[in-house]
Each structure stands twice: as C-alpha cells, then as structure tokens.
Amino acid sequence: AVHVDENLMNNSFARWPSRFTLRGWLKYCADIHSLPEREDLRALSFYCSDDHVMGKDQSEKLLSLSETSDAALYADYVLREKRSWADVLYDFESLSVSTSKLTIEALLALLPAIRPRDFSIASAPSKDFAGENGFIIELCVAIVQGKTRFGRRYHGLCSEYLSRLIPEEGSDPPRVHVWIRPGSFA
Image (cartoon, rainbow, N blue to C red; front, side, top):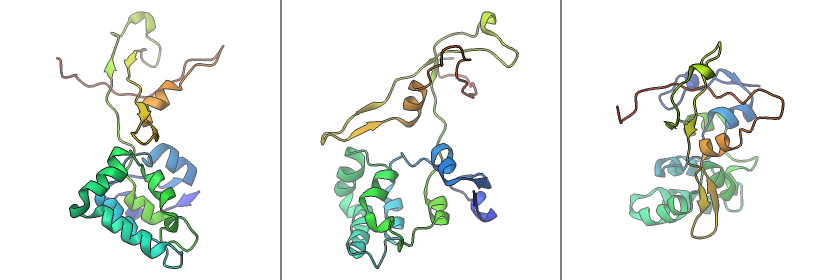
C-alpha cells in the first residue's frame, strides 16, 4: 500500500484516497489515459533523468512541446495522435528509469483524477425493475474508439469500461454507481 502526505490528499487538482495500492490508484483514481496539457509536459521536463543517455534531449523536447510557439508540435504529438499520459511516460524513457526524478508524490500532483462522465438515460425507470436498492435504467453510450491518421488505436476510458461489463451466466448483472441530474431537454 502507498501512504501519502496529507497535504497531497487535499490539493486543488485532485482528491486522492489516503491509502491505496499503486495499481488501484492508476486503475480507479488517476486518469492516466487522458491527454496531458502543455503545462503538464513542461512540468514533466524537470523530472527527466540527468544520468539517462537521452535525458537532456528528452527534457528539451518536453519543454519544446509545452511552448506556445510550438503549438503545432504539441497538436501533432498529443492531440492528433491522442497520446495519453501513459504514452508520454512510455515515449520519454528518461522519465521511467530508476534514476528519474519522477516520484509517486510528483505523479500525485501532476495526474488528473478520472472525471465523471455524462450519459443519456435511454429508458424511464419502471416499477417492474425496482429493487430494494433502487431501480434499473438503461444508458445510451457511444463507444469511443478509432485510429489516428498514423494508425495509433485509441478508445474512450468510460465507454470502453462500460462496453466490457457483460454479466456472467447465472450471476447478477454488473452494478455501476450513478447519479441522476436533470438533462438539457427538460
């Protein structure tokens, strides 16, 4: 389990649980599949390992990607190719070597939390489906997936997760915790 300084738990960027495993944090809390902003790439540039053979070059490349004057470079690398935090950490090897300055605490400060997603309800609640803990609704979810112009595959975090929720034979249907708010057509 990872134990983290209380000051990081209540920062203005994300609220993290006070105790978690690294796997649990990356799977359920941090949105490592989101696209990093330019200022995120700037912040990452300072964590490249000085001892790595490409560390200095990679640090400079991250700084260049973050500059307003190189907006087209950022657009090509991150936006058009839909490169996520995970992709950037993989592409810039000097961030993931043992001599990297990137710590768990730094990742806590940099990575965004998984945001709630809005979906349309495709059915009205029915008393026939009411249970002791609520009722069943059907969601209308477009599955986000595709290929970039250079052939990189991408998918939506939540729509991909929901599309894989298939009930096993003889078991209860998967449960997803939701909240309902008025829609824009009201």
